[in-house]
Image (tube, rainbow, N blue to C red; front, side, top):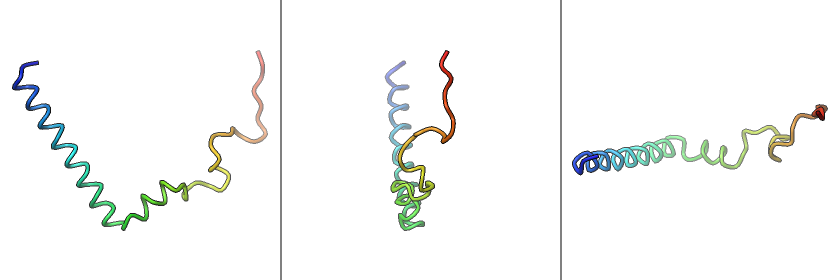
Amino acid sequence: MTEQAKKVAKQTEDRLEDLAETVRKKFDKVTEGTYRDRVVAGRFAAPGDRGGDKGRAGTERKQD
């Protein structure tokens, strides 16, 4: 890749990172952070889902 192409790629990457940060800030402002906070806290999970992946109740694996 030429130096000019690398420079353009780096500028594009920086602009996309700035855009992503701006979108995150605006989304948090619109939702007042509540949606993101709920997702992070796991509040949308069912009460039994918070403990991680424990498998389905009543199912067993067959041994080969």
